[in-house]
Length: 204
Ligand SMILES: C[S@@+](CC[C@H](N)C(=O)[O-])C[C@H]1O[C@@H](n2cnc3c(N)ncnc32)[C@H](O)[C@@H]1O
Image (cartoon, rainbow, N blue to C red; front, side, top):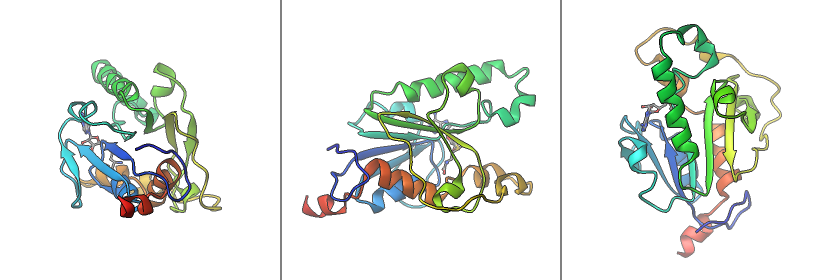
């Protein structure tokens, strides 16, 4: 079940997208013929295969080939450093969650987070990307910690983007709007880490 490549005719992978309510990365992998599932404490915003629970109960339950995880950055992101004081316990728990995801018994793992204390407390990221590298016209510095996965190649020559993320007006859904994965980034992950498995899926 597990051929890694950005090429066509690859095998279909069992993909777990942890901490995803939007379904964006899940659907990008499914569009290429992979058996992708999302998991979040929240329900999926769009219909599709989704575990509505703590992802830690799912990590070891199936033979996942690939984990893509978007753990919460509230107590980790350097942009929120002024709120760290007095939140040491929350930050320790958030780091422990990241460690559990990084150490999951899965062959290939990608953890995604903004610039955060993961770099100083666990290890430096393997790659830093921007949405505009993948055709989404925005700037949002995004770090990737990779296990057995190649760095992503850019899919767009776009030189910069708008800092939409910071301009989002206050609303109850502000955090959700700011945290949704951009579709070009999701498509790049699916093609470059999963490959096009549609023919394999049809033949099965
Ligand atoms: C930064 S958001 C990521 C959103 C994602 N990029 C998307 O497009 O849906 C982090 C998510 O992690 C979820 N989460 C937090 N702890 C979790 C856990 N133990 N198991 C599963 N999901 C969790 C939160 O509910 C939240 O939706």
